[in-house]
Image: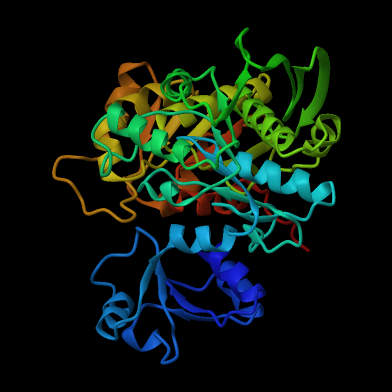
Length: 448
């Protein structure tokens, strides 16, 4: 939502809105001329408003939404607003159960580095608050396409990426069949003659490729380590917190550096490379530009180091993401232990996937598990973090429950030793623990 507000403000629209609390994002929007209120109230809807834009997270009883409806203002979903902003551009939409933000960011950074000045809208910040969106002068518009509420059906891109297809967002999807149908609809929105880039190493994405193979108006480019991938990954060489990736393109090997560790991030980068090539960007130039990507906030983001302990923040909240980030961090940690502070996200997700979360977390040397972060959901009787804790313990994990964020920094500081790596993990407010843990780990200042 903040990205949309930023682009609209830069394009000259009068923008107002509200958020739950002050933040650097709010300050960045105010600097662009947007009027941002803290807290939600009916009087925040300005008299001259032409419409109100909402996300699926906004409840029907939100006082600003109620006031807008009473005044007869058009209510526009976030995805419809983004689709309108993309109109007139060569659209590139990035979809998948995991990896959307990273891949969209890789494209935004690399295309910018090549001087193409793309517009973009991303679900996370790059290096600084407010960098989740940009109104560029170029013809390309790169957007993260969210499947969670089927809103990615709104776009009509020239190129689409599907990284993977798995069951998630259980409040909106009851089965894999519904997920496949939704992704098929998304693929069907690609303009005639456009391109679908799909990572066929992921079973769900490969299945989707088969389901859309009869669409003759669609170019399909497959990527991955599989022998039948059109843009095949030949090698992924871990180099500490980076990787060197080599692909086979038009019969020749092409190598480039990815500045974040892990096989899944390498796959994201290759999907970005294939999408850029489909838009006509020279492969060698784009591969080199991908090396300028320095990561996204909360995607294995190094928060700092104290007393020989590194603290890294991860947005991972689905079992596949948890396992992938732990694999990457374990490779990068060398002989040090990996300690995880995990916060389950959503009651519905924990109810369906809590056991798988626990199994994935068992790869860590020690785990602290917080209570469920409810986000937009109401509690579900009987659904607690114990589902994750019990599953992790059944797989041999060393697990400590924590019912308060305030207890965690001292708890972790008491466990961590020099050479260890602490990973704060989850889509909720667990992200705020990194600086607090570092503060507890830092040695006291010497007395004068």
